[in-house]
View 1 (cartoon, rainbow, N blue to C red):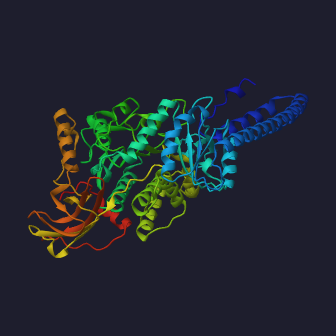
View 2 (view 1 turned 90 degrees about the vertical axis):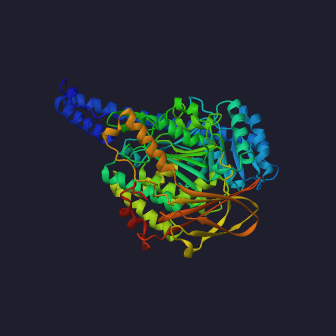
Length: 614
């Protein structure tokens, strides 16, 4: 038997199939070397062991069901004491352990003053019992929102997390299970969220009070300044290969350039040191934090990640971090509180014994007001469709809470619809699946899996921040170099109007540096930083004027050397309100001709040079 034990072992943690193969080889060798009488006795013992094992399993299942039912009955009894007097009036169910309920009262009073009707229940000892409790209440009331208050970490979590078997993402090296709260929001058990869901992953009353203070301040006390129109994107390099990485890069450009309204200010900080959108690599983490700390509506990271850190920037001379747990102590927005979106693996693994990156950021005193992130390995195609859905919900719908915005984006990921433009971009993103996925034939399962992977950490009733619309149009006959550009608009209220003439988002002011290894010296990296700052400077000219409510006409003096695609942005500010608008145009100089209408897929080929000058 000695040589049987020397058979090579399966690669740890990869697939069940390899381990099963070794077991079969071992069984064959054992049968060849063992006397018949020994095999008969052993087989009989094995059958008896199997019977006893099945018996114990049945008894264990019965015990779990019994305890779960008793626990459910107890929770329902306590639930009745905290629910509104009449069933059918509650729109929000809150699962909160008793030790935190007193500190939750200020938030309850605030949300009820907005018209919500809340019912608070104690947590349950298991995911099974909690699902039954939530579904029972949903059958009695018109529940639309579900708030989980408490961490899922440790041997005795305040609010337990559920798990689901992975189908696709383990081909990318993920675990075989997915930590998920989605099953709590899936009332009819069809795999789709029926409730807007969020988890506030606090462990102590102090953490809960601090987060509630930040939520109320976010909705009531934030300044009416330009942070409300700012979207900052930090992106790493995919590492899928030259063609795939370039396709991803161009797809992101189309999403940001054409599906974020022109009135919004979008910045991109890119982790490829050869790109003009990459700062001095040594300063990448500082610049990424500054993009957060300047204040913005959304701070988005796209790239590789793990439970406690983001990717590193790679150059021929070294690696530099984007963000890790120690760096989160430096987040301190000067205005506004961003919603953070991590299109990356593992950053929101709230079941991990150590606090995840997303949770750490959320619970910082000056951290993001909410975080959308994944709990396990996430995949590019599904994340692209989720991002498309979030863009559509933010800018193309009237969804009023962040929790409902994420729920609708998940449904949209699985049930395509909307405009022709959205359908074209969706088709383009799905096409990436054949380049990036190890199992392109399982796209449906991949999308369903990401419904369970992505979560909102924070208050799902958080109000979506949308400035009032500011209508703008351009007089096409005045769009000539050196002329006066006529801008017409309609102001929803009186205030100070700032008009900005900007290059379009796929253009930069000057021809960028040639980035080669000679720039990776201390002096050369300072040049890279200046090149990055130039790429972020998109405003050609700006004019501020006081306008009254109603129609207006303003003129902008165009530079004599300006031609090509431009954006005119408007920002109207009053004491208690702001309005944002923008319009695209093209300055028709001698070297510019009107461009034919093309689809997003056709435009991919036109964007191979992201650094083309103006």
